[in-house]
Image: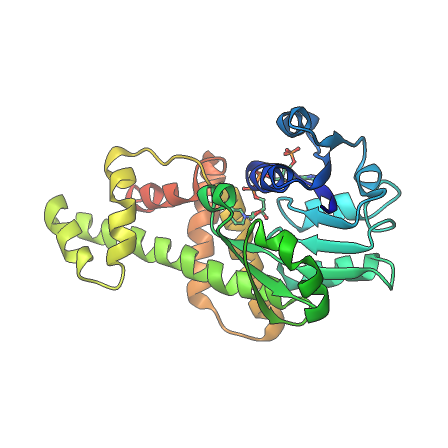
Length: 283
Ligand SMILES: NC(=O)c1ccc[n+]([C@@H]2O[C@H](COP(=O)([O-])OP(=O)(O)OC[C@H]3O[C@@H](n4cnc5c(N)ncnc54)[C@H](OP(=O)(O)O)[C@@H]3O)[C@@H](O)[C@H]2O)c1
């Protein structure tokens, strides 16, 4: 049993925290909107009034918040976790620069791993997330049993490498959706019948993705799993990290523009896959 402070119990964090609780770990929880922590509190977690209070007495602190601004808000300042955390697992998607900033805010002897996740709500619920871990291997070995409740940890390098790996993985997800959306729009524009369009896509490198998205595209219903605004945030992180590293990513920037355009049109709280409908309806 490990005493865990879980900071950020939104869609993903709520399911991950629940798994830890169900596995018998002792949990203190903090969420900016306290109501979202209530189901966990009813299941035995201890609510905290501030992130700092949640961290008191915890052996491991886990953060799972929206973005780097949220991470700063929960970690820095008098009510933040940075002053009290001794071992910390940063699991949000925030990019390497935010991880470096977090490390600078922590006490010098605190242990930090960046451990963002690939997979969505069903994987979080089932404990089958892929977890990209950056940081010290001995520290990973110490927390591996805890992470194993959530999914499969893969050590990808020093601190920041987990955040970097997550951006690489997400570029493929976002890019695939962008290309699929444009392929569908092109098929429509060139007058291909829908049935034939799906048949053509089936035999392409996007075949699996097309099959997966067909029902949503045809019904126009995109059940929320991952908010489009968060996908736009990830596309920005990719573009920023690439620019900082001097890597040219014009395709990533083009995909980012599709997500930014959809968000500006008020689609930010829809599922990110609704960008397909946005691209198809853009002409
Ligand atoms: N959903 C997915 O499929 C998925 C998959 C892999 C990775 N991720 C990543 O996992 C992270 C969480 O995603 P999610 O889908 O769980 O998002 P979510 O449901 O929107 O949850 C976001 C969490 O961040 C908190 N938050 C936002 N701004 C804050 C601030 N300024 N100060 C303090 N807390 C703040 C929210 O608090 P409130 O409840 O008060 O809003 C909530 O707890 C993101 O980095 C996302 O990119 C998501």
